[in-house]
Length: 189
Image (cartoon, rainbow, N blue to C red):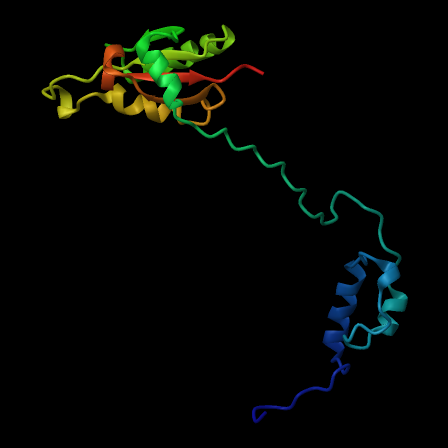
């Protein structure tokens, strides 16, 4: 090293020794039985002997943060099984209930859909039909077509509805086609 002199290990200036003394007085060993005789730190044996006994645990003592319980992930969504869908289309399996969201605002439709799905689960329904409509001709406000058709699948995938919904997919043409969804309801536990 060309810059300056290196101090030998263990030689502290009076200011450093005073600072080290203050630091060591605030420490509480985590495992006193495993304390090594020589920490490889500056010689502080005279300071350690004069250090007070470890203070009892108080409210001002530093604590390690407790681990927060992990929030369980919502269950994954699944499509209807091919055979089950065929039975729905043929009529051998019935659609337990249906809701028509035509003419509702997004806010109204979201509230109606939530309460409908909760009621359907409480009644033990397996499959319901959610009719969103295909949308207008595009000449409306901001040229937006089928707002509910676009947002209802997003709502069904949200965490608050996932405990109610196993999965969903577009309905067959006989049940409304792209303007409706088959929604499979999860059994209530």
